[in-house]
Length: 64
Image (cartoon, rainbow, N blue to C red; front, top):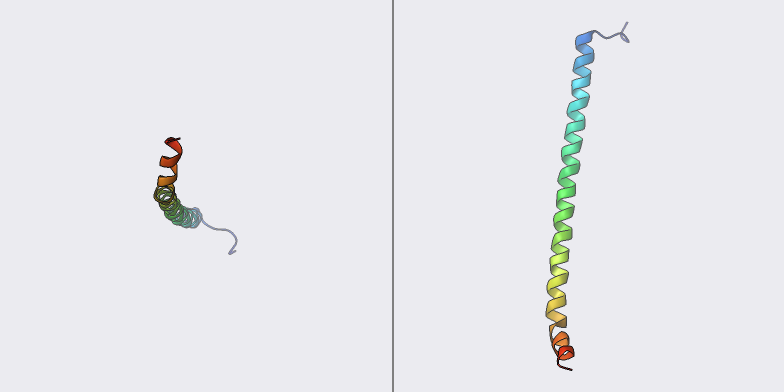
């Protein structure tokens, strides 16, 4: 009768599943934080590049 589990065995199985879900969620959150940081860095780099390359162009437009 391996299919019938006692109450304690069912609780242990549920707790193991819960631990696995928590571990997967933490791993997913870690990846999302890394991705968000990379997007933020790319945005800052784009802004800095835009200011560096187009700064003189903006000044000449305002003088007209």
